[in-house]
Image (tube, rainbow, N blue to C red; front, side, top):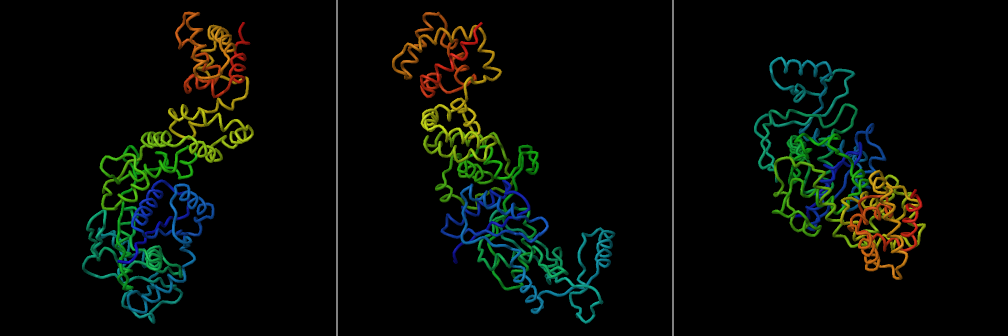
Length: 477
């Protein structure tokens, strides 16, 4: 068998949506796992809706997901002359014909079919007529000569054997009256010329497969192996839409998801390998096969995605996670300003690195990680949030005044020494540790949640910690 070649062929009429990203991933895994090629074609024939920014967004989204392709991407629009050439070949071979039916005739056909309770079909009136009978002033379309009887069978790797009666396919148009190719023709010619051996795409293209198979057979070309995968639905079972959060891949990046977590989550939407949840790229490449894709629609679940992303973040080496966080900040709202603060402070990388073990235990996304780390670069006097403000009442600040004296007295600023100093205060004041840790946390971070309070003290350092505590003590009546 020749080298396996798959393709991803999005239309650049908007962002790379999550369903398209999963289709690209499946194509990438199938090809790469078998030493084959994954090709990219941009189906930009709709000139009114296809835009350069959309093309750029698709390419950027694929790169962020880590899905590379072989060679340069192909523009379908730029291949229009090749598509016309094939249409002319089919006419010359008697496999297609010029149809001069007017719009009025086509309307009458549709109305007659509806009146008879039949689906609207072209009735083949120009199938065997000579072009010399053509009326003046009508630019013809080119129609394929579909078989009048029998079936077209698609042996689909996911859907199984699917049979289409040829009488239902009719003589569909492959070249419009303005000379532009239809989607049906362009896809077949491009896939053949690109050497595509396996087509993996959404099951909304299943009926297209029957039409396209007719063109392959008319040209004497091999029909690629087909795999039509179910679409992704929302948690409520309805087709995934914007109301479910069906956003572009760029939005998931901005929400702070890791590309490796997205790959893991997407591959599990409709495909499974036993009960495995965490699946590495290498395992995906070894295990993935289209025959293990289910026939029913998968449901997108943000809660599961967040949980999986949190697991990936916790498993990531601290230095790598720091680099990932800094690379992410330009895409986060308010992130560029944070990155500027980080880069302006030569000690900030070390502080962040020291804080990450505690920070990443609680965060599920990079946005949450940046938010929980914000106390590190907060400017004094820090502004506590509403919950922390309640803790920093007169009683809370009185506690801070007492513990401040103990902390100022220690010689070595470490987790052990700060812990010992705080506990000494709790014994003298006869209060529980929580009654001291809560106002300390509020004063140091402006929040009521944070990594361990002694870790916070050490990461901030002696000077910054004591100054933040003094800022709150100075507000005592």
